[in-house]
Length: 153
Image (cartoon, rainbow, N blue to C red; front, top):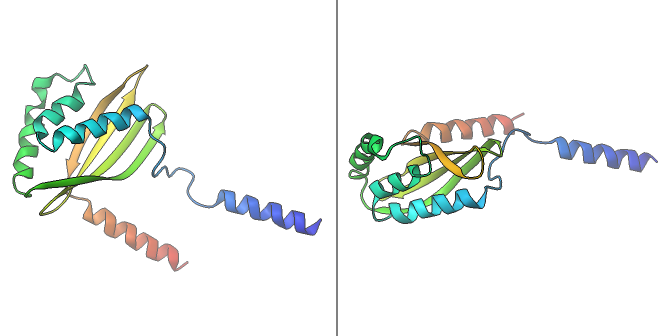
């Protein structure tokens, strides 16, 4: 009886371990994967067209409103050298209808982080928000410090 009680306590402790809110590398709907795969296939040869393609899924964002983001992105990537590839960084979701997916977009000089937020009101996913930035070094360093603190306690 004592062994069964210990066994049950161990199972409970192991199943409660970790952060229940963290969703890194959650299973993402195949339609979102198709959108991002096609985005990067287009992006490899024509970043402007890739931006337009991705925002086509959202009828509330007219294509002519994308001029600013296309110009700023083009200005940035012209300084980074040749595009190499991309890698998935993380995925998060707050519901099955609202998903964040981030990629590391690799260039010769340095990477960019692309963040896509997808929303599904009914049957189809739409791009709700797109952002790119270079300011992720600090996040990586902070995460490393947090892991060191966690390891010391």
